[in-house]
Length: 133
Image (cartoon, rainbow, N blue to C red; front, side, top):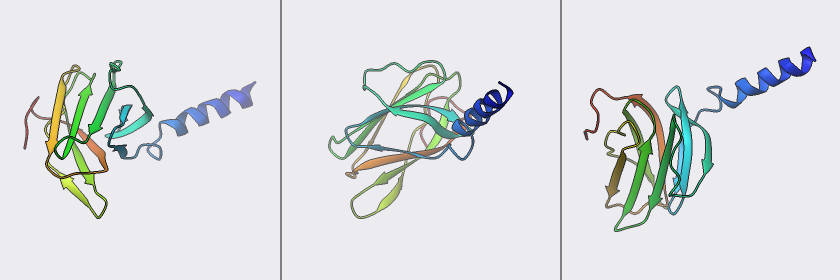
């Protein structure tokens, strides 16, 4: 019994360890739901774009509309800044992103460049709620 409990704890730690926390890449046409651990996405899974995030979760959807469009919403009590990278067929480029507001408010991002995916990482608590750089 003690061995199985120890193994279960070890596996649980691996699931949310920093090794499991890495940037998330959302392809055009996809929606993903995830939580944050030390500023990186964890427990990510594809979802329906109409899904409402539970407490502590973030949902992001990327579409191709006159370039690249991303909607993102966080059901966390604090706002975050984050890094967004547009992944194209030929190259990857860092994109300007606004603050991800707290309390399930929606953020809408649009870039004129056409991307096949957006990579999100480095989520940090924001100083101001709802601002753009």
